[in-house]
Length: 123
Image (tube, rainbow, N blue to C red; front, side, top):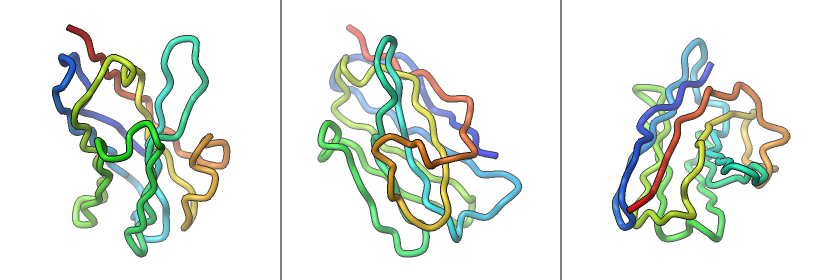
């Protein structure tokens, strides 16, 4: 299972750090992706990390503002989000797949989805 936390209501320009904690399995042979879905919009892949070699991927819309990282001692993956803007408002989810981030753009091949955490960016 995966569980997200860290969402909240922030103002434009603020930062948040989301956490994705794994329970019941170790992350060593997985890739973990972060996804978001805004009301009325399709789910989109935001970022992904392959745990084995720390390779990271980012959507163009968040490149340079978001950073994905892992803490293997805690089986947790983080998403540091800086310079947030209202277009980042969405429910954020994490999910996993074996080894690689292939297909993270849509998340269709990812599983073990968490319940999501709401991020709202508003002045």
